[in-house]
Image (cartoon, rainbow, N blue to C red; front, side, top):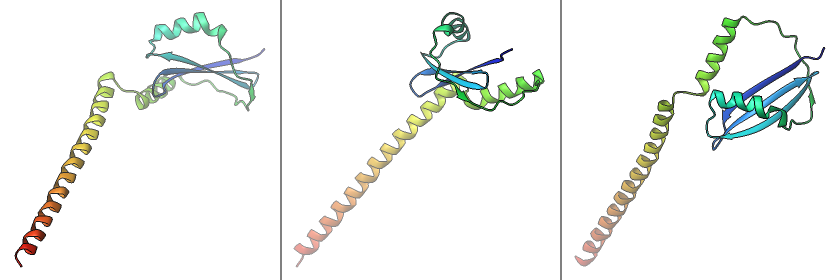
Length: 138
């Protein structure tokens, strides 16, 4: 009997949310990529799998060595999944704060650069005035 394993990973690609389907059939790995656009909710992903999974175009199979998979304790699996989610995501408010922090950092740098340039320009003008006064004093 053929054993089929399917894995879906949903991640943010910079502009859009994408889903990467990985399917292993007879030790051959096949991959398909789906662009969701906005962040998909669980129910949207579930409906996608139910209605559109059969229309996915998977890549040609790549032969892989398959390990014999022993059964994992459900509690251990739950801890593992939680750790993976905690690393990559965060709450919406945390993400918004991080974005705001980055924007403030950019603004601070530009203001600081402007002040520094103005100060250098002022020092240069003062030196020029001093030179002219020394030259006129002869």
